[in-house]
Length: 259
Image 1 (cartoon, helix red, strand yellow):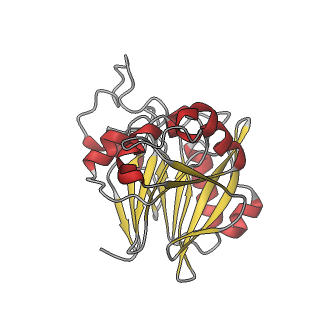
Image 2 (cartoon, one colour):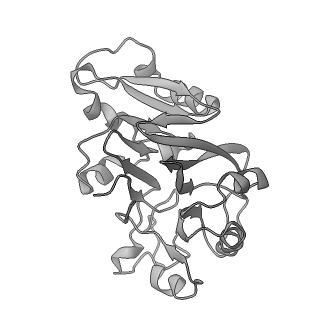
Image 3 (cartoon, helix red, strand yellow):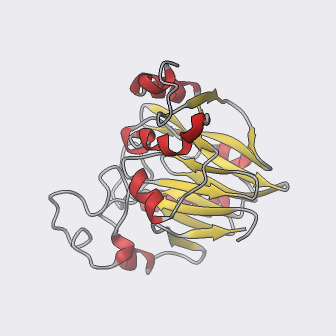
Protein backbone atom coordinates (compact mmCIF):
# COMPACT_ATOMS: atom_id res chain seq x y z
CA UNK A 1 0.00 0.00 0.00
CA UNK A 2 1.18 3.50 -0.78
CA UNK A 3 1.07 6.61 1.37
CA UNK A 4 -2.40 7.54 0.07
CA UNK A 5 -5.02 5.03 -1.05
CA UNK A 6 -8.33 6.23 -2.48
CA UNK A 7 -11.14 3.67 -2.79
CA UNK A 8 -14.37 4.29 -4.66
CA UNK A 9 -17.01 2.96 -2.29
CA UNK A 10 -19.77 3.81 -4.74
CA UNK A 11 -20.03 5.47 -8.15
CA UNK A 12 -23.77 5.60 -8.81
CA UNK A 13 -26.40 8.29 -8.77
CA UNK A 14 -29.11 8.67 -6.13
CA UNK A 15 -31.13 5.72 -7.49
CA UNK A 16 -28.14 3.42 -7.72
CA UNK A 17 -27.72 1.01 -10.63
CA UNK A 18 -29.68 -1.15 -11.22
CA UNK A 19 -32.57 1.17 -10.48
CA UNK A 20 -35.68 -0.19 -8.82
CA UNK A 21 -38.41 -1.32 -11.27
CA UNK A 22 -36.20 -0.67 -14.33
CA UNK A 23 -35.62 -3.24 -17.09
CA UNK A 24 -33.31 -1.18 -19.30
CA UNK A 25 -30.20 -2.89 -20.76
CA UNK A 26 -27.86 -1.32 -18.18
CA UNK A 27 -30.05 -2.25 -15.20
CA UNK A 28 -30.28 -5.81 -16.55
CA UNK A 29 -26.58 -5.98 -17.42
CA UNK A 30 -24.50 -8.87 -16.09
CA UNK A 31 -21.32 -6.78 -16.28
CA UNK A 32 -20.27 -6.19 -12.64
CA UNK A 33 -19.00 -2.75 -13.64
CA UNK A 34 -22.64 -1.75 -14.20
CA UNK A 35 -23.51 -2.40 -10.54
CA UNK A 36 -23.23 0.99 -8.88
CA UNK A 37 -23.98 1.82 -5.27
CA UNK A 38 -24.45 5.42 -4.15
CA UNK A 39 -21.40 7.64 -4.56
CA UNK A 40 -18.87 7.73 -1.70
CA UNK A 41 -15.14 7.23 -1.13
CA UNK A 42 -12.69 5.95 1.50
CA UNK A 43 -9.17 7.32 1.93
CA UNK A 44 -6.44 5.69 3.98
CA UNK A 45 -2.99 7.03 4.85
CA UNK A 46 -0.43 5.79 7.39
CA UNK A 47 -1.64 8.36 9.96
CA UNK A 48 -5.35 8.69 9.27
CA UNK A 49 -8.35 7.20 7.43
CA UNK A 50 -11.60 8.90 6.50
CA UNK A 51 -14.73 8.45 4.45
CA UNK A 52 -16.16 11.00 2.03
CA UNK A 53 -19.96 10.80 2.42
CA UNK A 54 -22.06 8.12 4.06
CA UNK A 55 -24.90 7.31 1.70
CA UNK A 56 -27.63 4.69 2.12
CA UNK A 57 -25.22 1.94 0.96
CA UNK A 58 -22.44 2.81 3.42
CA UNK A 59 -22.82 -0.34 5.54
CA UNK A 60 -22.70 -2.61 2.48
CA UNK A 61 -19.74 -0.69 1.07
CA UNK A 62 -17.79 -0.85 4.33
CA UNK A 63 -18.38 -4.60 4.58
CA UNK A 64 -17.32 -5.13 0.98
CA UNK A 65 -14.07 -3.19 1.50
CA UNK A 66 -13.49 -4.59 5.00
CA UNK A 67 -13.14 -1.11 6.49
CA UNK A 68 -11.86 -1.48 10.07
CA UNK A 69 -10.32 1.94 10.59
CA UNK A 70 -12.07 5.31 10.48
CA UNK A 71 -10.75 8.46 12.09
CA UNK A 72 -12.91 11.15 10.48
CA UNK A 73 -15.82 11.82 8.15
CA UNK A 74 -15.87 14.37 5.33
CA UNK A 75 -19.23 15.31 3.80
CA UNK A 76 -19.77 16.94 0.40
CA UNK A 77 -23.39 17.99 1.03
CA UNK A 78 -26.47 16.80 2.87
CA UNK A 79 -28.60 15.31 0.09
CA UNK A 80 -30.03 11.99 1.21
CA UNK A 81 -27.95 9.85 -1.15
CA UNK A 82 -24.83 11.20 0.57
CA UNK A 83 -25.75 11.08 4.27
CA UNK A 84 -28.42 8.47 5.00
CA UNK A 85 -25.92 5.88 6.17
CA UNK A 86 -24.54 8.26 8.78
CA UNK A 87 -25.83 6.29 11.78
CA UNK A 88 -23.86 3.23 10.62
CA UNK A 89 -20.78 5.11 11.82
CA UNK A 90 -21.73 3.95 15.33
CA UNK A 91 -19.40 0.98 15.07
CA UNK A 92 -16.43 3.30 14.73
CA UNK A 93 -17.34 5.07 17.99
CA UNK A 94 -17.02 2.02 20.24
CA UNK A 95 -15.52 2.81 23.59
CA UNK A 96 -16.87 6.34 23.48
CA UNK A 97 -14.62 7.42 20.63
CA UNK A 98 -15.56 10.78 19.13
CA UNK A 99 -15.66 10.94 15.34
CA UNK A 100 -14.82 14.33 13.78
CA UNK A 101 -17.19 15.31 10.96
CA UNK A 102 -16.13 17.96 8.41
CA UNK A 103 -18.33 19.87 5.97
CA UNK A 104 -19.61 23.30 5.11
CA UNK A 105 -21.60 25.18 7.74
CA UNK A 106 -24.94 24.54 5.95
CA UNK A 107 -24.08 20.85 5.58
CA UNK A 108 -23.22 20.49 9.26
CA UNK A 109 -26.43 22.29 10.22
CA UNK A 110 -28.49 19.89 8.09
CA UNK A 111 -26.71 16.94 9.67
CA UNK A 112 -27.58 18.34 13.10
CA UNK A 113 -31.24 18.51 12.09
CA UNK A 114 -31.49 15.07 10.49
CA UNK A 115 -29.39 13.29 13.14
CA UNK A 116 -30.26 15.43 16.15
CA UNK A 117 -30.13 12.36 18.40
CA UNK A 118 -26.41 12.09 17.67
CA UNK A 119 -25.50 15.76 17.94
CA UNK A 120 -27.61 16.79 20.96
CA UNK A 121 -25.06 15.51 23.48
CA UNK A 122 -27.57 13.29 25.28
CA UNK A 123 -26.49 9.92 23.89
CA UNK A 124 -23.00 9.40 25.23
CA UNK A 125 -23.58 5.71 25.79
CA UNK A 126 -21.53 2.78 24.45
CA UNK A 127 -22.77 1.76 21.02
CA UNK A 128 -24.09 5.20 20.09
CA UNK A 129 -22.77 7.56 17.45
CA UNK A 130 -20.56 10.35 18.81
CA UNK A 131 -19.95 12.90 16.03
CA UNK A 132 -17.94 16.06 16.62
CA UNK A 133 -18.91 18.85 14.20
CA UNK A 134 -16.15 20.71 12.38
CA UNK A 135 -17.66 23.32 10.02
CA UNK A 136 -15.05 24.35 7.45
CA UNK A 137 -14.77 27.07 4.86
CA UNK A 138 -11.08 26.75 4.13
CA UNK A 139 -8.18 24.28 4.16
CA UNK A 140 -7.84 21.73 6.95
CA UNK A 141 -5.66 18.70 7.61
CA UNK A 142 -6.22 15.05 8.36
CA UNK A 143 -2.89 13.59 9.33
CA UNK A 144 -0.34 14.74 6.79
CA UNK A 145 -2.95 15.36 4.09
CA UNK A 146 -4.05 18.91 3.34
CA UNK A 147 -7.68 19.12 2.24
CA UNK A 148 -8.99 22.08 0.27
CA UNK A 149 -12.79 22.53 0.07
CA UNK A 150 -13.92 23.32 -3.46
CA UNK A 151 -17.33 25.06 -3.59
CA UNK A 152 -19.23 24.03 -6.73
CA UNK A 153 -22.83 24.66 -7.86
CA UNK A 154 -25.27 21.77 -7.59
CA UNK A 155 -28.69 23.13 -8.46
CA UNK A 156 -30.08 25.24 -5.62
CA UNK A 157 -27.23 24.31 -3.26
CA UNK A 158 -23.49 24.69 -3.20
CA UNK A 159 -21.65 21.46 -2.56
CA UNK A 160 -18.05 20.91 -1.58
CA UNK A 161 -15.67 19.00 -3.75
CA UNK A 162 -12.30 18.37 -2.13
CA UNK A 163 -8.69 18.59 -3.24
CA UNK A 164 -6.31 16.24 -1.44
CA UNK A 165 -2.69 17.36 -1.24
CA UNK A 166 0.16 15.33 0.22
CA UNK A 167 3.77 16.41 0.45
CA UNK A 168 2.85 19.50 -1.57
CA UNK A 169 1.57 17.34 -4.44
CA UNK A 170 -2.08 17.71 -5.51
CA UNK A 171 -3.13 14.08 -5.79
CA UNK A 172 -6.89 13.98 -6.22
CA UNK A 173 -9.63 16.52 -6.90
CA UNK A 174 -12.97 14.92 -6.03
CA UNK A 175 -16.01 16.63 -7.56
CA UNK A 176 -18.84 14.13 -7.32
CA UNK A 177 -21.89 16.43 -7.51
CA UNK A 178 -21.72 19.58 -9.59
CA UNK A 179 -23.30 21.33 -12.55
CA UNK A 180 -20.11 23.19 -13.42
CA UNK A 181 -16.58 23.81 -12.19
CA UNK A 182 -16.05 27.56 -11.68
CA UNK A 183 -12.85 29.22 -12.86
CA UNK A 184 -11.68 29.77 -9.28
CA UNK A 185 -11.91 26.04 -8.58
CA UNK A 186 -10.20 25.19 -11.85
CA UNK A 187 -7.31 27.40 -10.80
CA UNK A 188 -7.10 25.67 -7.42
CA UNK A 189 -6.87 22.20 -8.95
CA UNK A 190 -4.48 23.07 -11.79
CA UNK A 191 -1.77 20.42 -11.97
CA UNK A 192 -3.77 17.78 -10.11
CA UNK A 193 -2.81 14.19 -10.86
CA UNK A 194 -6.33 12.70 -10.84
CA UNK A 195 -9.62 14.47 -11.42
CA UNK A 196 -12.74 12.62 -10.25
CA UNK A 197 -15.73 14.21 -11.88
CA UNK A 198 -19.52 14.02 -11.95
CA UNK A 199 -20.83 12.68 -15.29
CA UNK A 200 -24.47 11.75 -14.80
CA UNK A 201 -25.71 10.87 -18.30
CA UNK A 202 -25.74 11.95 -21.95
CA UNK A 203 -28.70 14.31 -21.68
CA UNK A 204 -28.25 17.66 -19.97
CA UNK A 205 -29.37 17.79 -16.34
CA UNK A 206 -30.16 20.88 -14.20
CA UNK A 207 -27.87 19.93 -11.30
CA UNK A 208 -25.23 17.54 -12.67
CA UNK A 209 -22.66 17.57 -15.44
CA UNK A 210 -23.62 15.60 -18.52
CA UNK A 211 -21.00 13.32 -20.05
CA UNK A 212 -20.18 15.91 -22.74
CA UNK A 213 -19.92 18.68 -20.13
CA UNK A 214 -17.66 16.53 -17.97
CA UNK A 215 -15.36 15.75 -20.91
CA UNK A 216 -15.12 19.42 -21.83
CA UNK A 217 -14.33 20.30 -18.21
CA UNK A 218 -11.63 17.64 -17.98
CA UNK A 219 -10.08 18.81 -21.26
CA UNK A 220 -9.85 22.35 -19.88
CA UNK A 221 -8.31 21.30 -16.55
CA UNK A 222 -5.91 18.75 -18.11
CA UNK A 223 -5.15 16.40 -15.21
CA UNK A 224 -2.99 13.33 -15.78
CA UNK A 225 -6.15 11.23 -15.67
CA UNK A 226 -9.88 11.77 -15.21
CA UNK A 227 -12.23 9.25 -13.64
CA UNK A 228 -15.98 9.72 -14.08
CA UNK A 229 -18.39 9.02 -11.23
CA UNK A 230 -22.02 9.51 -10.13
CA UNK A 231 -23.31 7.78 -13.27
CA UNK A 232 -26.94 6.81 -13.80
CA UNK A 233 -28.35 3.85 -15.72
CA UNK A 234 -28.24 5.76 -19.02
CA UNK A 235 -24.51 4.98 -19.27
CA UNK A 236 -23.40 1.38 -19.64
CA UNK A 237 -19.77 0.92 -18.66
CA UNK A 238 -18.37 -0.94 -21.66
CA UNK A 239 -20.24 0.98 -24.37
CA UNK A 240 -19.52 4.36 -22.80
CA UNK A 241 -15.87 3.79 -21.97
CA UNK A 242 -15.20 2.73 -25.55
CA UNK A 243 -16.08 6.28 -26.66
CA UNK A 244 -13.91 8.16 -24.16
CA UNK A 245 -10.71 10.03 -25.07
CA UNK A 246 -7.29 9.00 -23.82
CA UNK A 247 -6.79 9.70 -20.14
CA UNK A 248 -10.47 9.42 -19.24
CA UNK A 249 -12.04 6.34 -17.70
CA UNK A 250 -15.18 5.41 -15.81
CA UNK A 251 -14.70 4.70 -12.11
CA UNK A 252 -16.19 1.51 -10.71
CA UNK A 253 -17.27 0.47 -7.23
CA UNK A 254 -14.22 -0.88 -5.39
CA UNK A 255 -11.65 0.75 -7.71
CA UNK A 256 -8.51 1.78 -5.82
CA UNK A 257 -5.98 4.51 -6.55
CA UNK A 258 -2.63 4.32 -4.78
CA UNK A 259 -0.06 7.11 -4.59
